[in-house]
Image 1 (cartoon, rainbow, N blue to C red):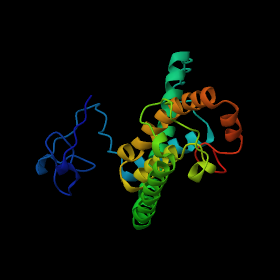
Image 2: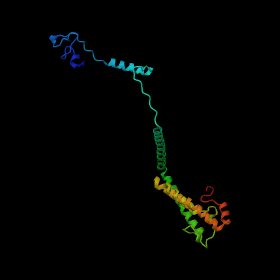
Image 3: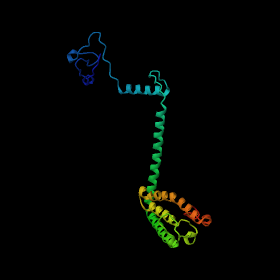
Image 4: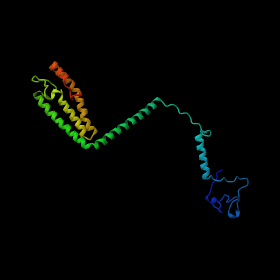
Length: 234
């Protein structure tokens, strides 16, 4: 049986059709007497009853008295592929977050140190120009664009070549570093280091092998007392 409640039934002295206005129905007031044998309409739950019911349920959850709750079905084991996918996704998010943090910190540091970076990059380019000029001056007619030894070539071990075997490559390395310092772009800035670094490591070994084949022990002893690019480091 569905019980419908009316706002008029809760007002004093007012009865809704089909409901009782008080404890006893009064047909003179418009009320309808309840049918014989009918159960009285239950009173709606109040705020206090609802709050008490929620507190009782919370107490049952805290104390573990969950007998009236349905049993939770056991969780089936996940397949290995799902576990690996979740682990890979978690690792990728962790690495991506760290990379983003490092890039953000580096960008903020570059903005704060921008004037110093400009001065440092300009100083590096000044060193590049000096190395280019000094290298060409010390090589003289021995300088060549291609990787070859001509008949009039001689082994140069004086000047800037007294401590470094490849000062021209040193100038290119400084150029690449200055480019990375001056250009506020992660791609264009480090493109010089990647590009020249690849060329350097592909060529320097062949060049020294050619010099050993041409000058023999003279170049071997020269290698023992000099550095390739940077004195004291490499």
